Image (cartoon, rainbow, N blue to C red; front, side):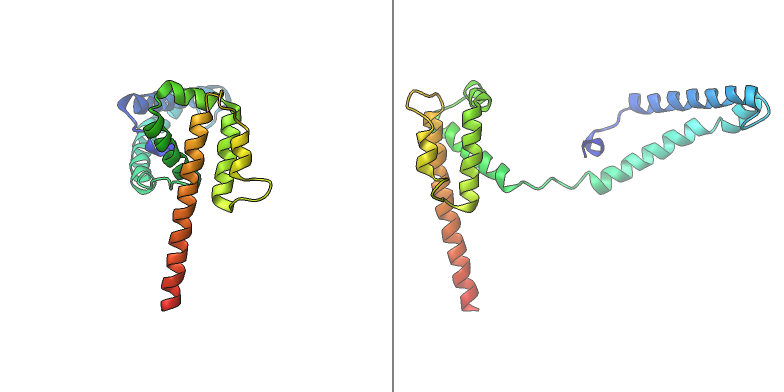
Length: 177
């Protein structure tokens, strides 16, 4: 929720106060014609005059409390985000890509589909239908994304190998207990 992360400034509370004053004025005006919530405009205005102040104070403390309770939680990085960040960093390091090259890759639908498929393989392993060789064949050497594809595939293989070693190391540790 970005609402709690956004810092409220004085203008925000002034807008809330002005909105409260307008609401009180309108409710008081209706009492002139409908005798509700009071018999006259001035009577309603006196009865509801505290509402804008109360509203601002209540909202201020609610925002502070919500920020303290909910604002400190950091969103958890998903496996896909970590994978994307790691492989993107490798592409940037090895190919010396800048913002324009990354933007070009982001706009390339073929490359984005490739990235989704690579992540699927990373999570589930290779299959006959979905494997690195088939993914690499989607791109020719003339494609802009060809070098990035090779880096991503190589790094994904490294990550899969590392994950495999870690899981086999954990299995050994569990067997020792």
